[in-house]
Length: 331
Image (cartoon, rainbow, N blue to C red; front, side, top):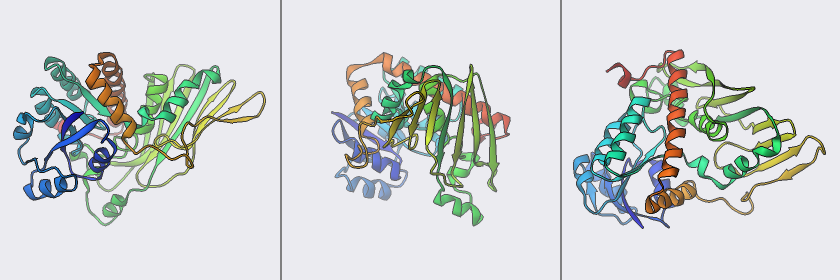
């Protein structure tokens, strides 16, 4: 059992806590507001609260910290925790830039702890089913991944406000929020693309609200439709010479099927589904991350680091090409 603290008291932290009870024990809550920390901790019978990051980092009862603060704070907060020789589970996107990420990787290695980015979807059982069945396609001809969900916070933008998730000062925008899910899926399946393009829909805050991304690989391309300002229910697919693999979405996958080009038949492959129930949102990654830490699995960490770095390289290139510059990059 790993005793951990949390930075961030939003809904995503709630889902991590409720999904990780088998392997993790909440031991501390940080918030700049003591009242907020106490109220959040009370929901989970945790009375150990901190209003100082330094105090949390120095807490001897804590082995790891889960960080789900605004994106622009990730680097400084994670570095402080790693320097205190505690493991860090860092919500996506891990950092604003590749140099920030590499600095955290170096800090983790120096202090003999692990830095793990919480890309939950590539740890899901049905994503692994998708990956295991790629060979059935023969030569891959292409793919299309969709993750487009209308955000309630876009209503605030339309009302003239500037919420953090759509604010470049907070390293926000659709590309680094929902967009990283399909991009990460492509990287986990096919590796680093040769090149990439992005045609964003720009919104009033100066950030991107969504758009179409093309990831170019040797011999094929992957089209990504990612957005927080419109909705899509389109499935995601990978096309090959011998057939097509179809999933209902790129995260929380309920359906995986293989359409055979020769027989025209369809085979259902999902290991869990609507009738059989789904694991909780973070459950599968929480189990895997606990295993990695408890077993000291350096190989697994390095593999995840490589995915994280490639995704940051891809999104950084796409941002630069479209003038999406974060505040941290100007300082």
